[in-house]
Length: 287
Length: 269
Image 1 (cartoon, rainbow over the protein chains, first blue to last red):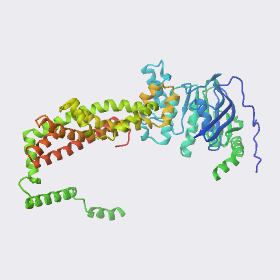
Image 2: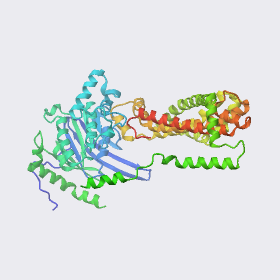
Image 3: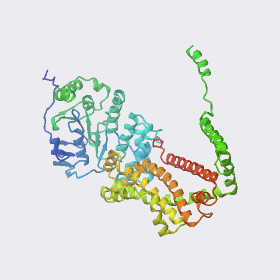
Image 4: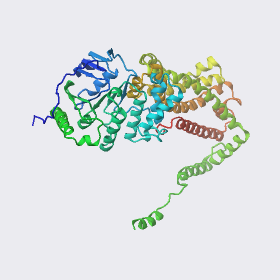
């Protein structure tokens, strides 16, 4: 059962390089020195270009270095070797051009929903040039977009997991960064909430708009169906050390919706990606 | 039908007697009174005599005035301590280099009890309010600074990362993330600090009063010393002890209430 059913037009191992990428990772290596004695190679020789307006999903078994790749793009971790660029400029640290949505949401517990969404505009460079009125309009717009109107005065501890996730998404969007980096944002949610928020995420990202008007998204997940549903391309990673095993063009038509999940191509792609990481996933589970 | 069966059961359940909590204390007071009346002398403190002494001390205004005097010094010393300890603690928690340099200094002074610096305080500042304030500030400083360092040093790392990815400067992050994240710990430090400040003021006034030879401006600690060393009124000393405990309770509740109002997001202390 090693040979997976292969859908048509799956350029496996297609070139990871494109012309004029938004983001470029070139030969990125990240080694963590644990107390000097034992070094762990989290990511090795990771080369990938991400186009402007693209929705790229990185999928792989837990511990494969997905988060490390995202942190390198965010500028939160510096690569041990290799180059990372945005619009051709080297990434040297975090910046407001790249917004991050963290797996645990990282909401400020002392701020209400409103205060959290407003945070970057109020205290960071994203709000420069916005007067109080414009800022209020922008915050209200994104609070409304994620469906949290009426909950503005609530604190994070008063919200459900799904609502917290929406707050984090609204905060990310309100800063209007060029690039959205999302680290398993839906992982902590139940299956139904997850499906609903996948649909909403695509709507908020702007799948109805022409590709040139969309923001660039790098999205991490371990859920294969989620990856196929959301992505323009799926980068499949394997672990120890984390490497790209395949980059897969999804090619499903947009806008995508519930009907997309029932398409034979959707099933075939899901199966195919699972076959790429199955052995490793089993190994990771057993050991 | 289960509801019908349950309702007589709840009706029959013995309702806790509202005064059950005071039974044991009342019994102790009764035993104290009986033993004192049987085997004591004219000076032996008895509950009845303590109540009479309390009535006298309150009516004469001595007790309220003494408490007010002591509270004034406590608030002054506490404010001095907080104004130094909170900024210092935040700086230590936020910057490893500062913490490494200052921490050994603080930890080597911390075991020295406030009462042990009394001789220095009296020599430098005399036997008045200044010395008492210094002792209070010294005592309250340590719990506030230690808790502030802990709060500022253990900010959730992803919150700091979130601020960094939104492009906040280091100073803006300190102001908008580190300080609010440290507030609950600072609140704990202030509560403990107020407790030891109030303890220290009694000790300071006992000793400061000893040198001054008593007076009406010595606060409650000095009142106790006068009742002990000059007029030998044990009932009045007991009144002072009870007053000290009650004031401490009120102060602690007030700080807790203030923290809750200031931090509606935080778990209840």
